[in-house]
Image (cartoon, rainbow, N blue to C red; front, top):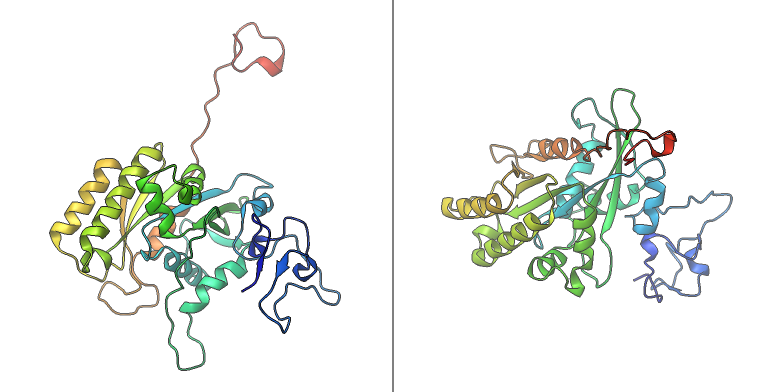
Length: 318
C-alpha cells in the first residue's frame, strides 16, 4: 500500500512539501514495484494544486478561498452506513436527481474521492454485483476525509459544502471520553460542523447485540446533545427496510429526543417504500435536501455607538 514515512503526511490528501510527483519525494513509499499509479505527471499535463481525492485540512484553503464552506458532520457507530449514505448521494446527483429549491450541481474538488466510495455501488461488467463501500478505517491522529460539493441556485454564487467521512470507532471513543486520544478526528468534526447527521443503524438494533447498539447510539446522542450548541441535527434511521421492535425504536427515539429535542427524523434505505429497488431508494433525497438547506447563524452587530466620529469605531463604541 502506498504511504509516506513522515508522521503527519497522508499522500491521498496532497504532499505538504509541495511534491506534485509523489515518486520523487524521498519520504514516499509505494508497494507497487511496477510503478503504476505513482502520482507522476507525464508529458505536457498540467497538475492542479489538489489531488481530487478526499480532502485533508491543507486542501480546505482551495474551498474556503471565497468563503467558509458549510460542514456537514456525519456521525454514527461503525457500520451504520455513513459512507454508503455519502456514496448514494453522489450517485443520485450524477444521475440528475434534484437537490431541491432549484439547486444544481456546481462542481467538486474531490471527484476522485467521491468515485472511490461510489464505484463499489455501480454495476460493472463481471460476475460480481454492486456492493457497499468498504469500512472506513480508523487511524490514530488522523482527521476525517472531507468530500466537497458545490451547488448554485437562481444564478447566485455557488454554496460550498464539505461532508465528513469518519470511522465510527472515533465517535464511539468520543462518546465515552471526549478527550480521548483516539477521538481527535471526532472532536474536529463536532467543533467545525454546521449541522449533524446522527445515524441509527436499524440492522444493529435488531441483531444479536441490539443492547450494545442501543447503548452506542444513546451515548452518542448524549454527547452530541451537550456539544452541538444549538446546531441542527437530523436523526437518520439507516437500513429502514429492516424491522425492529416497537420498544427498541421508542427507546432510541426517546433517548435522542431527551438530549436533542429538536432533531428531525428521516428513514433511509436503498430499498423503496415497498421494499423494492426503485432507483432512488428511500429518504436519501429528502435527507440531502434538508442538509443543503442548512445555513450558518448570522452575527448580530451591536448598534452604532453615540459620539463616535471615526467610522472604524461606529460599531460597539462606548
